[in-house]
Amino acid sequence: MKIIPTEKWPIKMWLDEIEDGALEQAKNLARLPFLHQWVAIMPDAHQGFGMPIGGVIACKGHVIPNAVGVDIGCGMCAVRTTLKTVSPNKLQNILNHLKSVIPTGFSHHKRKQDSKLMPKMVSFKDYVVVSRLFEEARDQLGTLGGGNHFIEFQKGSDGYIWIMVHSGSRNFGKQVADYYNKLAIRLNCPPEVPKAWQLAHLPLDAKEGQSYMKEMQYCVDFAFANRKLMMERIKEVFSTFCPCSFGEMINIAHNYAALETHYGQKVVVHRKGATQAFKGTIGIIPGSMGTPSYIVEGLGNEESFKSCSHGAGRKMGRKQAIRTLKLSEEQKKMKQILGKPTSQRELEEAPGAYKDIEQVMNHQTDLVHIKVRLEPLAVIKG
Image (cartoon, rainbow, N blue to C red):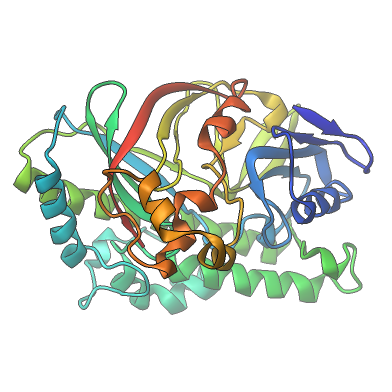
């Protein structure tokens, strides 16, 4: 861990190097008047909007929409099967079938999903954004989305075949984030925090702050319901081709804010591209589509606000990846993995666009303990 002591609050970093833009954002966070203790930067960190992705902060009495981000509740789930092998032919058949069952990218279901599968809310009138989008979201429940979201089949170091899903809250998260960030900008006038920092905040004891926390939590719950439904449908397809049983689903989010107690004070912990790593918590840290992922157990390190990385972390933007990576080289990296990129456009999520997951894991041995290493066999990208 490195410490930067130059700002109002220290910056603690679990990495060797950080890009200039992400470091400047971390310094802005470390100047906030309501920050608690310090800024924690995880080993997969890179520049985001307002706050680095891979950042963790605790705030006293305030919540910052941009310190959660637009894909609220985005996270991982994983299930272990009772199988120890699966043939490439069967995996290819499973991939082909799943593409007709689970919409990807901007696609939605043609029919609305059962409203009983949606998270419960006490009253529509308490949710300004969610209530407006509720019916539309029923088309999106059980869909993967785009970007770095994926479905992956893996072989574990424990000898078993695993299934993993990475997805978020679809349009819910984006709309809630945008609405409350704009509201925060209006309320922060005259600005307590410079507008250029993109860290407009809402007081937690004001109705606007309470409303954001409520709608944000609904997005977290929706993202979980979305992953859960996809996993159930993946299991149905998988067991059709490969009869087996399944273990309990592991689920963990990496974009949210939550009330927690740290260093004797109740604070709002913001995890933006960071995973909770309380002592004994089972989590998931994915690599890229061509590198291993990990099932981990949290060590409860208070210096990171009991958090760890949420993945490998990007080392180049999507446009840069498409422009500079070579298709043949990226295909070679993925060897026999099914679902490898077939066009230059698909290189935005290629292994070369991401940091070395092994280095990322080596930087956080004081945050998590590795339980299972998962080698990719086949992948569907959003």
